Amino acid sequence: MSITKSLAGAQGNVQSAGTKITTRERVREILPPVVVLILIIFAWWLISVTIYADKNYLLPRPMQVLHAALSNPGLLWQGFRITLIEATMGFGLAIIVGLLSAIIMSLSKPLERSFYPYAVLLQTVPVIAIAPIIVLWFGYNQRAVVIIAFMIAIFPILNNSLLGLLSTERNQVDLFRMHRASKLTEFVKLRLPAALPSIFAGLRISAGLSVVGAIVGEFIIGSGGADGGLGVKVLYAQARMATGLLFAEVLVATLLGFAFFMLVTVTGNRLIRNWHESALRKEN
Amino acid sequence: MRAPLDSQSKFVAKEKENQIKSLTHINVLGASKIYPNGTVALLPVDLQIQKGEFVSLLGPSGCGKSTLLRIIAGLSSATEGSVQIPTTDRRAFVFQDPTLLPWRTVESNALLVCELEGLDKAESKIRVTEALQMVGLTGFEKAYPRNLSGGMKMRLSLARALAIRPIMFLMDEPFSAVDEITRETLQDELLRIWGIEGFTSVFVTHNLYEAIYLSHRVVVMSARPGRVEKIFDIPFEYPRSPDLRSTPEFMNLAKEIGTFLREGAIS
Image 1 (tube, rainbow over the protein chains, first blue to last red):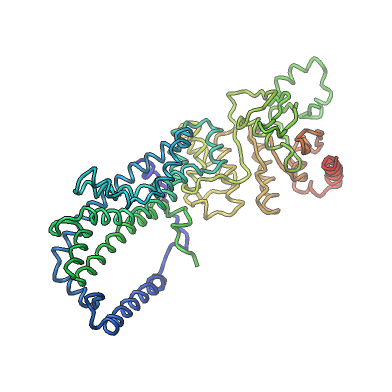
Image 2 (image 1 turned 135 degrees about the vertical axis):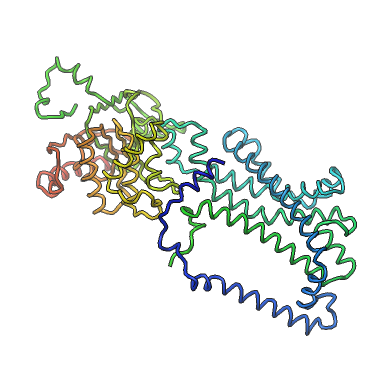
């Protein structure tokens, strides 16, 4: 997209003093959450060897989870891969359809008035509740899973993008109108770049949701555990009371969602890092 | 009512009126603004502004000074009456806030209006360099607006407008958000640039000292409903020096207009 290029091109060689970070600052930034993680794992271990010492089938010990993960790498990798593909496709569809709808609605007031209430209303429909209908229509297959992931992921993108595209500063619009800029110029040079922070706020939410959607979809299509995604494998592990494996699978699913989220966040911050507050490193 | 550009034209004879007419750059003919809900923003205004003249619209908030400027700029339409201006002349508008695009560098922001006007790229680049130099922003080309002070942002906003070499320069309280010292510096710079470029200026402000210091004529407006009360001719010669602000003549005129403003606000 040309706008992406022009933004990247605009990143000159002037960097504020605040953007240069030392190793010490980085340690100070990373250390606290790492400490919290260690404390949580420690608490988990403590509970699993005391209260649940006889009931590790309910709460496995950390080492059991690690062991389960290491002894089933193929299974986890397969689940990861399948869920990754489903979530990516659902997310991709949500980006395309969500962004395009937001752009079209932002350009036409009548269309916005006609469809926006439904866009909001549809968000309140528990998509999980209509997931079975989608399975009914598309069959017990991955297509249905992709559609469910798509439906869960689209609304934050649509809403945030539309909000961003519609909240361009009045004076900036006047400046463009004053100099007889075309609608297209106004969109490419003003509305779209101004909306990028909002668009990425929506994408960040949807990134995680698309993984949730894929797993919910897999729960519903169920089927034998052999070649399903993480959702299917979680159900299968639960049925077999393989709690260690179950926990490992949940962790892998979490990692997948986190990776999605980070990918979008990093991309967004790269695009807007020079100008938007949310992407700036805290100075001093 | 019509202001002379030089002392001789005070005695303009009737036969010269046609010539004066051709000098009229902005001709506001009974322009008024009434909003659909019935609010009267501006009662009909007649105002002739000459080529190269510096006119300020002065008044309290709600007096319709910004409305009048926006009508002149073509950003808003008059409910009745009209504004006649040569359509081919380049108009530049400076807003109260700098209206910079935060994702563009200083240089790229300064280029924006040239881009919108479809000017030649190489030519625009030269003009932008000149405009940035005029406002003292040379060396900051690659910086982003967030790294600039309030005064520098306003300078950039001016440079962006100047880069197209406007024939008509419309400003809506451009210096109201900067501190007093910066404001006076910016006023002097604006006068200096205007002296070089010679564009017709319409300057909206609520600061009467600013209006007097900058203008040939000060159009005093009052609120509820917005209307033109009186037009004051400012007798001081250009170029004006900062010392002018503290002369008795300046203070007396400020006092006179100030009194008039207060009475207008009460009535």
